[in-house]
Each structure stands twice: as structure tokens, then as C-alpha cells.
Amino acid sequence: MEKTSSYVLFDNGEHKCIVFTSLVKGEGIQANQFLILDHDEGAIIDPGGDLTYSPLTYEILRYTRLNKIKYVFGSHQDPDIITSMPRWLMHTQAKVVASKLWARFLPHLNSSFTSEKMQGNWEDRLIELPDEGQRLSLGKNELYALPAHFLHSVGNFQFYDPVAKVIFTGDLGASITSTPEQAVTDFAAHLSKMRAFHQRYMCSNKILRYWVSMVREMDVDMLIPQHGAPFKGKEIIGQFLDWLWNLECGVDLMEKRIYQCPVA
Image (cartoon, rainbow, N blue to C red; front, side, top):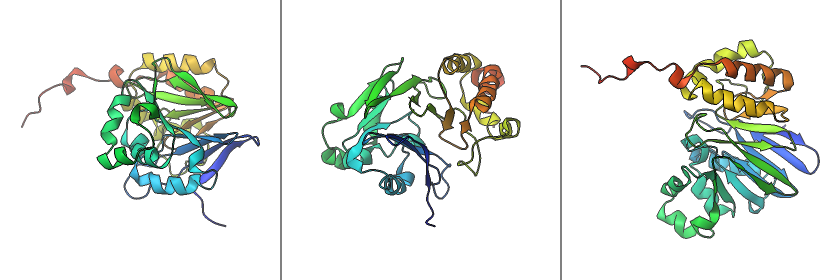
């Protein structure tokens, strides 16, 4: 059987979610990318950088044509999120969807060559998300841009698919694991793979509680992070939310002694 780096997460015949898990080669950190298809329209979530553009494009073509891509979503500004943006602007007609707080930094990724080859002008290709988030039409349904600010970026969004009942959580829930295709089954054992990252990269317990309260009011069957293993099912998701509710992180843990001029 041909080896593949993708699998179908959800498919009801009209709406499909695909996860790409093993496209990063070499020294780059493992990262997941995502494709949502609804009635012949597509959206890519966190496509990554040059390390992933070519293999991701190859994999996407197994499911749809590039001219069917309506959106490229960027949860935040990290290199492993959206530094391949210039290529998507050149080779598709997709709109780039990003927070208004850093969307205007994105043109710095464009070379003059890209600007000349871009399909349309920059203003027409950009959707700037307000802090409160918004809904965007895809096919006959909608995707939701959910506010997740400071988790970990100042302008951070996650993306909710109400048909598949999935939140693509970006770095929240990220773990160090060699099996991103396998869902978490033992939450206690999984903690060692994500505790240190969350303690340093997430802003504060206050922000985590805002996010947890939002998600507890939603109909969610899966949480799929950008790195590592997904959380599937109400029980595991509940354990994850309970853990976040009590987690001290970021500014909660930072100490004044760190803020000193380094000595010789």
C-alpha cells in the first residue's frame, strides 16, 4: 500500500476534514496541517512554511484542486504556521484569514517576485479577523474563527468546524509525540508530553479559564492541535479542560529574578 501522510478525520459525503501529520522532514518541529472541504470548496488551516509547502500541495491534490481553495487560515504568526503564505497567494485565489493585530505584518513575507505574480492585490486577498472572531462561509456551511488570544499569541485564533464538531486548537493541546495520528487515550500518561510547553508558552491561568468556559458551552467531539496527538471524545476532552482550568502558566510562574542584566 502506498505510504501517505494524511488521513480523513471526518467525512459525511458532503463535508470532509483531512489531517496531514508527517510532512516536516529534517530538523523542523513536527506540525500538523489541515484541510476542510464542503460542497467543493476548501479551507487550509495553518499550512506551515517552505518545509511543508511542496509535500502539502502534493497531498492536497489527492483530495481537491488548488483552484477550489477558498481560504488559508493562519492561527497566529509563527514560522511553522503561515510563512508559506506567498506561495498560496501565487498559486491559488484563496483569501488569507488572520488576526487584525498582525495581518499587516504578513506582507513582509512577500518578495517582489511574489507581489508581481500574486493573483489580485493584497487588500483583496486578506480577511482581518476582529478580536471577537467571526463566521466564514464554506460551501453550504460555515467555519468559526474562535478567539484564543494569548494562547499563545497576542492575536491568536482557533477554528471550529460545527459539522465535524472539531476545534483546530493551534498550539493549545500541543504535545511532543511521535504518533500524531493516534488519539490520546491515557490522559495522565500524556501530561508529561505537554506540561512544560503549556507552562511556558501559554500566557496565564486567567486566559485559560476564559477559553475553557467558552469551549464547555460548545458542541465539540474533537480537539486537534497543530503538534502531536488529538483529543477525541467527551471524556478525554473533559479531562483536558479540567487540567487547563487549574494550570498555572506563563506570567503566573515567571519570577522577578529572571529580569536582570546578565553578569559575566
